[in-house]
Image 1 (tube, protein in one colour):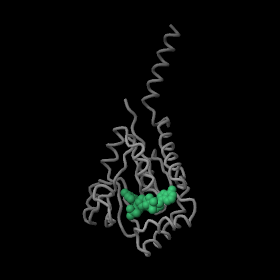
Image 2 (tube, helix red, strand yellow):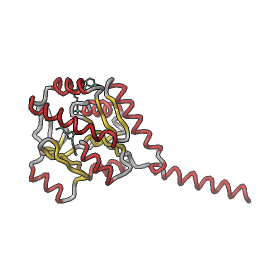
Image 3 (spheres, rainbow, N blue to C red):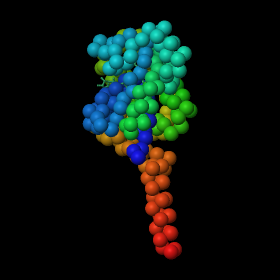
Image 4 (tube, rainbow, N blue to C red):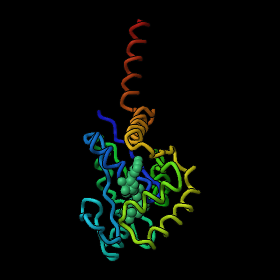
Length: 213
Ligand code: ADP
Ligand code: 5GP
């Protein structure tokens, strides 16, 4: 019997490098991981595709998903709704793949509440100055949105301790490897290893019985 996959949530300040890290992790270990694609009411950025970066929905369609209980969680972030579709996540975990949700903090805490075994990872650049230069360097937001996201980052910092592990994204390559190691170490949790534990118990019981006879 194969073990169920791990559910890992990756959050962090906008511009911390989450998207870049995810892409590198998935390229390196594509058999192991499945990245959940969220639904959002945000408009696509240039180069983004429906069904690849996000499912871009109208507010009406998004609300329908909430009503039909199709989302594990949802939250509002800087004026737009974002949510995690349930089906894909549970299907992939059942197939033994480790599923990653790249979602903001309120959503992450809701997932942990619903599914306490979830691994929460928080990605941060090495300094606030580096965060600002990455966000500006990306060049995808207007000045007003950048300021909004930097202000939001200061509020988000209050929640860093609620996460299981901190990932400092300084050297990209090292950070990808660290993330991989942390997620893979979860496979050794006893709650995750029920099949192995069951078999070991049976083998030891049989051995004991043969020693006693
Ligand atoms: P997020 O998804 O967290 O908002 P992105 O992945 O879009 O962040 O990264 C923001 C910017 O920072 C991008 O321009 C990206 O190329 C750059 N970046 C990501 N990781 C690093 C890193 N380790 N060192 C330097 N720049 C990085
Ligand atoms: P962006 O607009 O930059 O793509 O994403 C904005 C924020 O929304 C990021 O912090 C991202 O992690 C978060 N986000 C993306 N998808 C989801 C989701 O399904 N649920 C929640 N709660 N947040 C999400």
